[in-house]
Image (cartoon, rainbow, N blue to C red; front, side, top):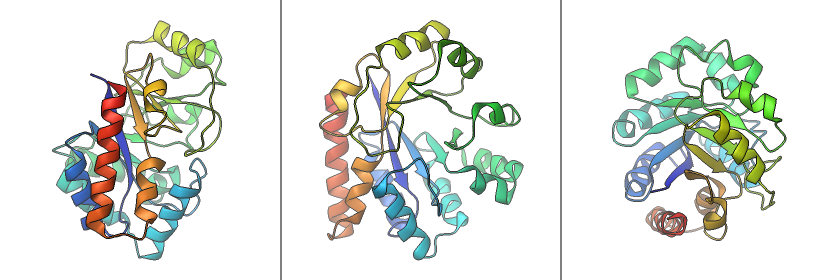
Length: 238
């Protein structure tokens, strides 16, 4: 059974909604990438950038991530996704201790290059990123000690785009190095999920879900619509 991980931005429209949404999604979703809003999310496309901005404008605080994690992380595998400034500002060890207390499984930090992860990888599971531009030699380096799963970026760029790249060679190179579960992200939605999931163990979906948060509909309708998208994607990849 291939897995579906959902990226959800914390705290928009509020933290209670985030908890309710994740609880509902747990019927179809195998893990949560809990996004920590940041003012300059360089790896994210327009949709997630906008939701980040709105969450911050509504007064998001890091404590909101802690409050949500306390309620959900024991029930569904949860990973904190944030830019390194979020972790560095409070102190990396502080964030690790908080994550361990809540039962968070790992960190996803897209702006932390592999060379810099070495300083932190023994403290707490850091999800490894591999991109189509990585050479076979670099893949061996990056995946020398993978944790939890490998995040395969579907193309060079930002989340939410619809580019296509032939990933056969890079998937083969990854499989030669490790049996760690391989999940693909970037550009995965109801239309692309089936094709994207070929030869990998699961998909990571962000913009397709988060875009609903920007729609002018009630919170209950947003939850219903995102849950339906998750159902469609989970069925498509399996």
